[in-house]
Image 1 (cartoon, rainbow, N blue to C red):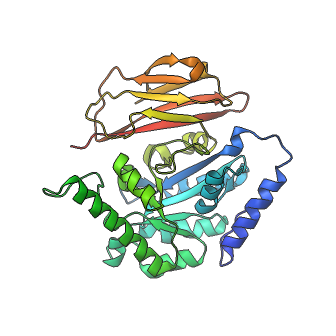
Image 2: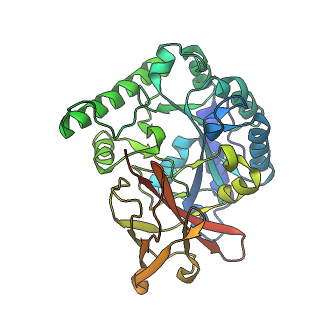
Length: 357
């Protein structure tokens, strides 16, 4: 049995009811880690004339929605998924939340009509200043309110879409953090004033954060969303939840379908506690807790090449990752996967690294 979480003016009640029905329908089945996982996907532009690195074509976006519909995925509103994950309430076996960053016009003009057609809820993370300034290629507040009235979750992407790690001028660390806090709360207040919504969800601009920003979010009662790939689970870090960016070559359905079906490892990052690094070949210590995966089948990669795996204590699940090469660019990822036996599905976890200039 499949339930649709529909959009519309009664969407929040409908979404909650349908998700509860879906969970009740599967309650007789044995509990598994599939019920502990949800996948959050990220889009920006739904257009062919915008930067390819952050764009998906309307045709590919429709293919994604058709695939989710035709393969028994439960597309959930993000706030409902987060409620389930935080309370450790079982999720549908194939739970997906759709999110968009920034507030581009193509979300309203192209994606929104498709999502309404497929009765699929979604979340819009807004940077408020481009909308206040009526910047070209962005939505207006009237359009944002239309999405909100139709059931979309409207959430925080800061005011100016800053590189949050960067200091301005000679400001101290305390002044830098105070500036980030003020911008965070200003954006939240603007969204509440314009739409009535106040979820205290932040999508970090560019997916960049550090330990201090995570602490700030915790102090302000926010959930944080990053851009490192992987499924979200009961044991995930709710100050930096993973999302799959599906743009450019990653918009291809042949690879996206594997991500839609992925599961969350029960894993802890023990060291380092921040993704910011001063080296181009950083190491990490992970603790894989008990799960429906075989530690012998875990593989970890960067740029498609295997990383060195050193099991410091396999009985305790302690794995140290190290790289044999240096990686270029401001951001890169280490990715670990393992198969769920006899399912065609994979557990997926990634580490985001950031080396500011």
